[in-house]
Amino acid sequence: MTEILRGSMISASLIIAIGAQNLFVLKQGLLKNHIFFVAGICFICDFTLMAIGIWGVGAFISRNPIITDVLAILGALFLIWYGFNACKSAIQGNSTMQIDSTQQQKNALTKVILSTLAVTLLNPHVYLDTIVIVGGIAGTLSTEQKWAFLIGAVCVSFIWFFGIGYGARLLIPLFKQKRMWVILDSIVGVVMFYIAYRLIFYVIYGS
Image (spheres, rainbow, N blue to C red):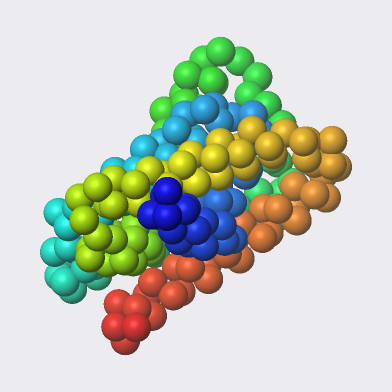
């Protein structure tokens, strides 16, 4: 039980922060845009990466500067593109509350799945949090303790992503005002550009 609580607290301290992934999930929740798949993909990625980190299989990622630099560059390019679209949406005020047709929904599902994977896996910070930090903390634990630690960590991940995904619907009345979408898109754009800047800074200066 102690390790379950420890894993929960560490996971919560890492995951509950304003970042690209959380803002993405929040916006999809507000749009009611395939949120089950969005939250599910985020959770599965978290579970997989935490398990890799805790069991030490992915330790080489944190030790290989080439891999981390490539991930950082890809992540920065994606975030710049996503931030540009968010700012464009804020200027034009063209965010919508729902997708109109069945064909659009089919296309949107593929797009949302790919975007969710990109916003999750092209961000090197996710590997730092899950593989390096979580894995490093759990590295000294026994096998039984590692399982307990992992259970605690992934439970928080599950609750958080599905919570903000479906909980975002409570904010829908507020977001019926066009200006709220402009504000959200503006925040998303700024955060994406800032994270991209930090990734480029990391590649150039190594910190």
